[in-house]
Every structure is written in structure tokens, then in C-alpha cells.
Amino acid sequence: MGQSVVIYFSNTGTTQAIAEQIAVTTDSKLIGIHAKVDHPEADLDWEDPVNQSYHEMHAQKVRPAIEAIDPAPIAAADVIYLGFPLWWATVPGEINTLLDSLDLTGKEVHPFCTSGSTSITEAVSQLRENYPHIDWHAGRRFATSLTADEIRDWAAED
Ligand SMILES: Cc1cc2nc3c(=O)[nH]c(=O)nc-3n(C[C@H](O)[C@H](O)[C@H](O)COP(=O)(O)O)c2cc1C
Image 1 (tube, rainbow, N blue to C red):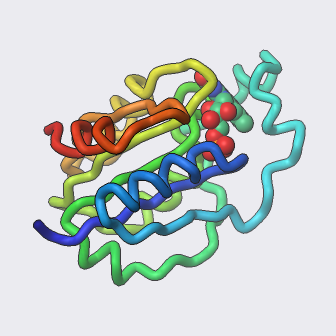
Image 2: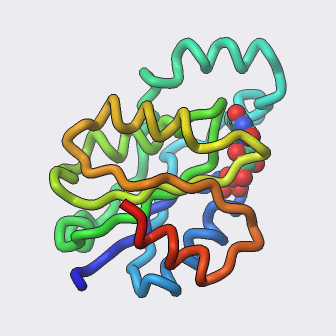
Image 3: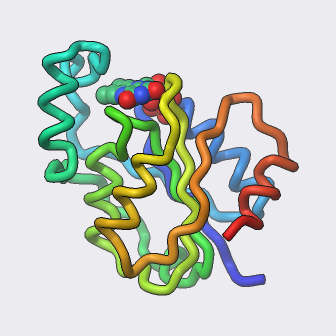
């Protein structure tokens, strides 16, 4: 089997904890994405309907700057596990910034998320639409109590 990496964005640590377990179970290198500038507190109030409608209209266009990452392990990998918290049912802009900056053509990418309750379905269909050159595999929303078997089953899905 080829090399794999886990790349994740996590604002409050939930997705990071899952990403760490996936990295251990799949023997992958772990790479964290960090925004150059923290989101203002008000921006993160996702239950505020004003914020929500703003982001539903603009989320796909937002590309916040991210700290530089070493592209070498990503270029060398055949399989990528890509993790994020769901923000207004889709990926945080940092994930789009990352995907715009990498050439993942032909790589197997397994998206995963954490969320309050929303499923990953909408986020994955947007990713497939926006980045059609990537070989997107089944996405999964993980609860914090996941097992190694759950991770292995998901990683084996098309
Ligand atoms: C800006 C923002 C938007 C969010 N939108 C949703 C949402 O649409 N549906 C949902 O179930 N959870 C939503 N959440 C909750 C997060 O997805 C959830 O708390 C996640 O596990 C946080 O992951 P993290 O600790 O890795 O940042 C949102 C949180 C934030 C901060």
C-alpha cells in the first residue's frame, strides 16, 4: 500500500482529535491547517441566523489565508484523509484555500467531518462539484467515540 496523509482543519479541537485517531489507525502523517488570522468571535456564532444567511450566500467564495504547509508528504501520498468541522453544512473556507493550492489530481481523497448534527452529504457534493479532478471517496461524519474498526471500514470504501 502507498503512503497516506491526514490533513485537517479544526477550530476547537474536535476534528483534530478524530484526525489524530485516523492517523494512528491508518499509519498516516498528520498535517494541521491553520488560518493566518483567527476568525472573529462573532463570525463563529453559527446559530445566529444573520451569520448563517450571509455564509450560505458567500461560503463558496471565501478563501482565508492559511499558514504554509510542507507539500512534499502530500505530493508523495496516494491516499489523503481530509478532515474539517462542518460550517453551515459545508467546508470552512480554509479547506477551499488548501484545495486551490494543491494538485491532488488522481489521488484518493476521503473527506471526514465533525459537526453538531448536520451530515457530511452536502459538503461532499460541493467538493465533488468544485474539485472534479479529485478522486473523492465516501465521506463520513464521525462522532467523538469512534473505533479503529469504524476507521478501517470507512477507509476501505470507494
Ligand atoms: C461557524 C460555524 C458553523 C457551524 N455550522 C454547523 C452546521 O451547519 N451544522 C452542524 O451540525 N454544526 C455546525 N457547527 C458546529 C461544528 O461543526 C462542530 O462544533 C465541530 O465539531 C467543531 O469542530 P472543531 O472543534 O474541530 O472546530 C458550526 C460551528 C461553527 C463555528
